[in-house]
Image (cartoon, rainbow, N blue to C red):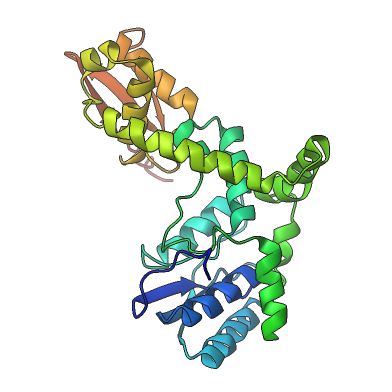
Length: 293
């Protein structure tokens, strides 16, 4: 409990509980922390028997004296399945819902953001706090807690599916890096994320004084601050399906410098410059169907 970051005792919280060991541990610890807990299970309907997982969560919620809610979302097989399932899950939850992410998830997230070419804010990983109260715990500890409490977590076969990049990082990349480094790299990556987060917060405060739509101001600013200002602008805008990667930020800065008149900003959006100002342009509407089709 000393390594958890729950909200104050008596706070009403929603816990996202899939039925796996991390989320069941989250449920048990949240109740132990004196919170008024509602456990919410979101069923994607992607595999047979997924409804049983809700029963596992409901039984655990009843045991610990928490409220329970089951929600169903529709996600079809196809490209970007992992990202679409995650988006659907979060859309079904309140924005301040607690999740059971652990230090192991943090390390995986840092590596995934590195593979995407993210900057310092991405490499800072997930921010600890009441929404992610278990970031100070290891995955092995949540499993051990469930064993101690006699809970039988749901085994999600998708967590071993190599189609999903996170699974390859978890089962292949991290073990290989640990073998090369001859040490457990999860604490190392989490510590690096903490250091980068502190530095990123300081720089973000300085970058916040910049107007990211002012091309002249971006050109005159130190490039590190200009990058952060653009990244924050894009991350908070309508083009932000994911945090912008380094290549997208550099394309926007090229527009600010006058090296290009417009550039791709992700998700079909574009950044364009007119009269020294940058603006986001939405995707062009799809053409109407031709008559007879």
